[in-house]
Length: 323
Image (cartoon, rainbow, N blue to C red; front, top):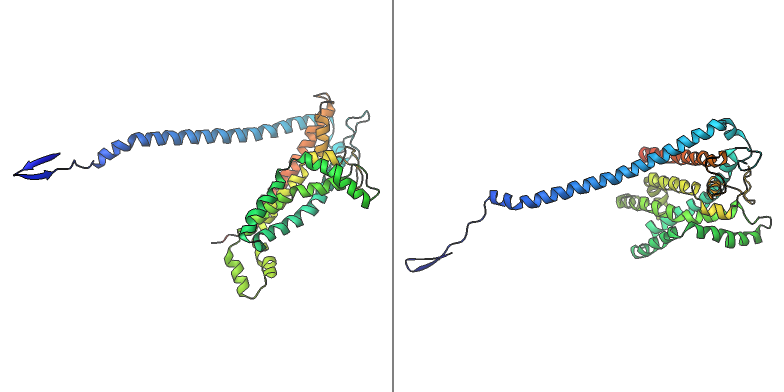
């Protein structure tokens, strides 16, 4: 507003809003923000509830069906018999047959994946430049996106014929090629998680080691790896769980011949391969043979649960905290 006082042009400015006016101005926005925040919290709570409910449902299904199986088959037969023939006329339920095959292929895979994955992680974190690491790590992780069925046929059609030239007694379906390719498939998991653990070690520890006259190799072995031990072990255990639970590679390349033993040159049947066999629809639902998949699934669940509990304990026990 403009006023003339005594022939002098005078400007008057509207007063600034008071704190009460400002509060009234922002009140609608605050209500909207609160409503949005409440909605988002409720949505996240629903997602969390669905996740927890799904897990509980899976566990309860395994428990109830496994209890029903053991009401028909004594648990001592399940643990002590030396043959696995639930689909034959002479039914035997020795889970050690499937367990030995699973441990055989997983051991071969672990023997390949853990050292190669750890060395790859050390190379990415300690030797590769920042620009090279930026390209190498995503390229390595692309390997984790390859479907496992592709790995299975790669083991059957490429690795097995190559190994047969070196080992003539190697059969077409075998645990050796399945374990080797299974190890290759989990290398990205070991390398990526271990590299994250190694890369997170503070630079001050490296500088202190170099200041004391240690070489780069000595620093890695004596300082960096012990400092990142909990993360490395966690990646190892997660990779072992992944190897034990793998399905398509062992189903395609290892065969479906349940036999007790640790010979990697012959066909074997792992626990996951048996679940695939029964789940194909040839076995009537609700039959005793069909119920065996829940007993086998519960065995897998117990093994992976034990590994995860050990990993959780180890990480909490040996985790290093730095400022």
